[in-house]
Image (cartoon, rainbow, N blue to C red; front, side):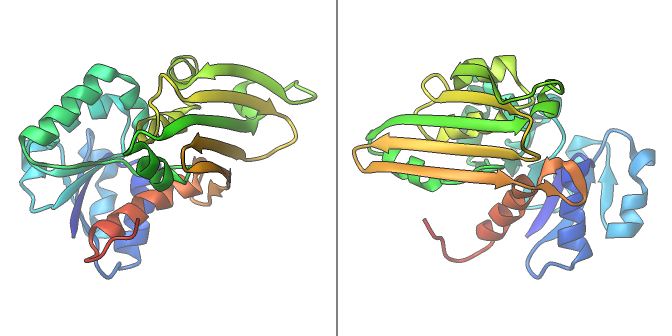
Length: 258
């Protein structure tokens, strides 16, 4: 599978190293779309890719799928056009807090018979939520996220402090850079308007911890994920990065699990 990436930041560099750098058996990153070609031209020699600043030329470069690995602005500006030509994967899920954008992306994907893939990011258990919700039997989804107090500007906190408690839609509005996981969780389950969220600043931890509680006709389930940082970039979740690679690998298989 030949891949095109929008963006050349931390996530893109991880993908380049682990796919092209490690000579992945079935995946190749062929093209990278950037705003400043001169700034990133070293990537061409280092990873054998072609840089583009023109979106039309990028989409015509023989790629099978486009991975957005830039930012929310890039999603809004580029993804609607991308979906007219290619399947795509959206990494900056914070963009999906915009209901009008979500509707636009879905309509475009359907109209042009393409698929928008959303990797699970820094959490798990989404297969269970989708299976239960497909029959309307999901009753409650609750997310409790603990983050290092310093990452939430509570450096002086001596004990854990609940800084938000409410619905995912409001959590995203108040903490757009910290609650992206609640968007993907809401979309897989009961929606961001019904997904319950608690955000805790904890001075005793050094990593993000997500606990998901699910209730429905099937019974109950709990998932707890303690995220380590990506070695290549401490600001990026290890699980979020490899969820992109895992999703791409599954798309290239001839069998599917779950």
